[in-house]
Image (cartoon, rainbow, N blue to C red):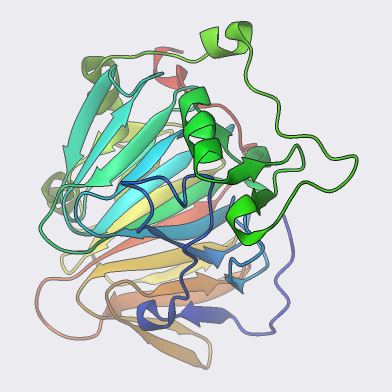
Length: 325
């Protein structure tokens, strides 16, 4: 875990100050995926482009990012070695998975959360009527070594001038770039490697890895609802835990052993830590340093909701199959 070095107990990134990267991944030029934007809020994430801006470099044991896409824009099939959790901040989204994206799917609405199992290819698309935004949590300080793309995604990208090097860096031949001498393209997955990726059905995934907004609201009175964790709605140990607060949640003082991150989804919230005080609006991300005493509460009346991501001592690693243990 990288130590935080700003000297502040609360580090805040405003949603309106998110800096997008439109060249982050190998499908940047692929029709249907060429209009997406990638945001890296905390930690370096898994971007394959040196153009990616990172708001807070230090990592608290996990990474926080975001994906923004206009209607009908798709994120191509890929996988990670550690957890990938999505929170729908804005819009309506369809998630699909499997070698060709046909094994199963689920539609998520605003406020829903999806703890995608490791060991499967997954993709998602904005099926709403306006620009949509997903917040993302990636397990581990280094996010498990980047992205593993389905072979057809790599092949399609090559047709549009993009080559991924064995180093994980992206080269755009449309800009005159080429692989440096001595650097080879990323090796394609072998048939044996492809056979290791699961093809679970929606019935095997959705009940255990998806939590709906209104279910979390119902469980948030008087204490925060436990969403991801050993005792959570979604029982898992991905290297972090996720809790959910609403305007029904009792206000109290908290003491944190590990770094914690707040992601506001509805309303406005006040986070107080010693002499520091920050007001969070929808989409804002706040990082509270470890060994702090703080209080979090709605700052105005009305509906309010917020996710808290807490670091743990559990190693970031595969999560698929945890529910059967």
